[in-house]
Amino acid sequence: MIRVTMALLLAGTGISAPVGSIVGLVVDAGTREPLAGASVVVSGLDLGAAADASGRFVITRVPAGTWSVEASMVGYRAQVRTPVAVNPGHATEVEFRLSPEPTRLAEVVVRPDHFPKVKDAPVSERNFAAEEIRVAPGGNGDIQRVVQAMPAVVSSGDQDNEVIVRGGNPNENLFLVDGIEIPYPNHFGSFTTQGGPINMLNGLLVREVDFVAGAFPARYGGRTSSVMDISLKRGSARGFDGNIDMGMAGLGAVFGFPLPGRGNSFIGSYHKSFLEIMSASGVWGMSAVPYYDNLLAKATLRFADGQELTLLGLAGWDKIVLKAGEDVVKYSYSARYQTFRTAGGLALQSLFGKTGHGRFLLSGTGAEWKGIATRDSLWQDTIQVTSTGESSYGCRYDLSLRLADGQETQAGINASRVGSDFGFYIAPDTVFRYQYGPDSVVIDSTPLLDTLGRPYVALIDCSARAQSWKTGAYLQHRLGLIRLGTLTLGVRADWFGYTGEWTVSPRLGFSTSLLPGGIGLNLGWGVHYQEPQWYMLLQDSVANRHMRSRRSDHYVLGLERLIGDDARV
Image (cartoon, rainbow, N blue to C red; front, side, top):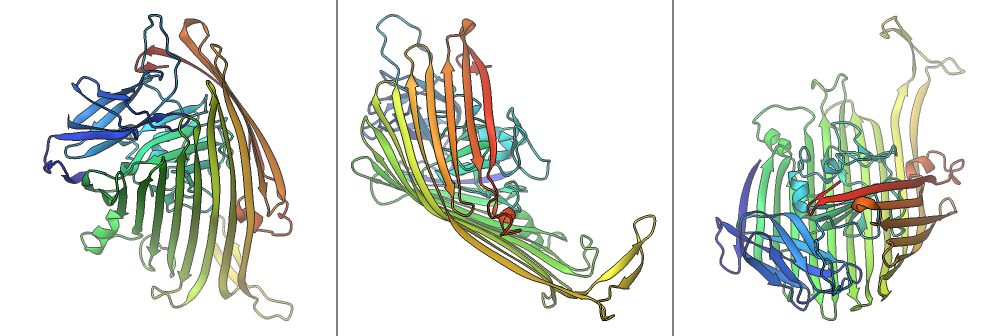
């Protein structure tokens, strides 16, 4: 891969500067309260900084390379992020969420946490830093391909990045980007699955990923296998920062810059098919060229009194054109298949000091698949058209409160308007009865006749459309059992208007480190429901009107042991 880097920082760092910087945020893991005065240091270097009143820190003149960065504060368990890659002339973003830990007066050995856990998911979970995604063998910066290497996860093949968890179906995984559900995050994917050969999310914009492969918390609903919760970086607040990447996967650009106001920023990316560029330039002749483009943009606006507004937009479109006479087409017709996907949202996060935080989200997503086949390459004589579309527009509010030491309560509610439509058309054509030989080769054919003895001509032209409401709510409480461990109790309720079904999903989690030999025990149990997909419901809108949701019950047990500060089994 060829990478051209562009950077212009306010401090006057040159394009080829051998140093970069580390910027980020230190907050309380439960309340999101900024931890002013928290110490952040780069291990192995005499470099560090203290978080300001908003919890933000900046460490400048960090030598380019890969480092471990530790954040600590009295009353909290220290946390280490590794590996953190620092590129020349760039600012690398790191976010620390420290968990409270009682201050002990007796002499003890304090070990920093190298393995931050997914919040309220005690078992079968993994947190990925951005650098881990970038350097994962075979991942190529694709988050789903990185996850395929985890225990309990398998792939459906080498041609796409589909995630199949614990024997579930390919469409049972929940994908969230900054809280917005992205039902179809890949190019060239179908409406029956979620995978595809190319992910629309640029890995260079990802800050971290929380992946839960079973018994996930009550705040997640609507899927029965796993959760992938993706958090994006903020844009540069110290000047223009960007790069250009070119490889066989495509040509892309990432850019970020500050917006007016203290701490406001923008970050975005664009990606385009490299094979499309090469084919259009006539460098080599190709058939069935994959065309695709995607855009991802995020703006962050900070207000006084602990309020932050985030705007996010994602769009991707792709197509494949098959022309009559090319090797890939054995018949005398041409075909074009294309998809278009969009997602966007506006989120307002409000901090309540040491008490907790709340987040209000407005979001919308849409996806469309279309295929057209003609008898010539001029798209004039149409013989078949298929189209499918899905949409969702809604809002949700999540609240997290810490009203007592060692206890945390979370609650949320959501509502959305969902819909789907499809159409299928086949031009009038004579129906034949075929006779096959021993090698399944057609040796004869005769027209099928109607009751009047005339050749039977078939025409298919059908369509359907449906819309409905989905609502849900959850309540969850996390309780510290003094020295015994941590217990998490939760329940969520969901309603799907189209089928008229209510579902109730209890969840439970428990963690303890009291087993002999320093072994930790993690338990998880939960009931999970997923509504039928639209293509199932609309196949027969009468018979399938009251189709039940699929259900999966998760029972997960995990054992873990630290064999070093940065090594865990």
